[in-house]
Length: 287
Image (tube, rainbow, N blue to C red; front, top):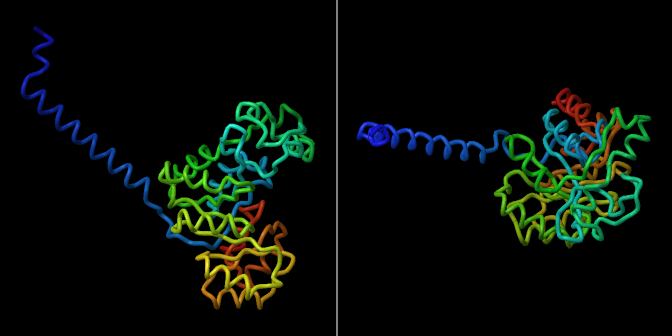
């Protein structure tokens, strides 16, 4: 009898109203999560491999710290494993970071998870295992999920192997297009990004400014948004030529504050650095 009394017309009406409110809030939350608070910009500070000056590069702590600095972009590197998982790491070889020999594309995800990627950072900073516990390589999915939890900072992905198409498929699956860009010096890879996802911005990395007119011509033909040059060859002429073509000008990877300030004063739009907090302060001081 008590069970039947729960399903009175009044109870049913209240239940429908509550369910309706829940659905509205759920949809509203989804809409808000899909909006980007900061207007899309290709310029500003890019946290190179996360906040890698203070944390182990390409790890979740490095990316969380870079998000906390409110950098404009995070940057990460990816490889495919032997079982087709997309790992975030800079080197094909595991030796430098972990002290254990192996290649990412010859190892499975579970094998990689057993490796401690903090070994190199720990040695360079004279830290003990207690001070810096083991770190693990994250999946690209994990990093994208982290970035999608907020609506200001974007993620630029650098495919170090043939993982471009797999990365874009994952981005499509996750609905993460609004949060993502790609960067690399390989023209074929970056052209593939524009072929598969023309709405995603591309930052084409160049080794030096010896061929800026040719770089501009190719970038415009391919639909790239930015040219990013090594810090060792930056000239005012190169910056001016790139801007005249309505392209953003970036420089990688700048960790010296004096050089940061010099490049910002010259009009560089995009600055890759291992120390995003320092670069942000300088950008803010000059704008």
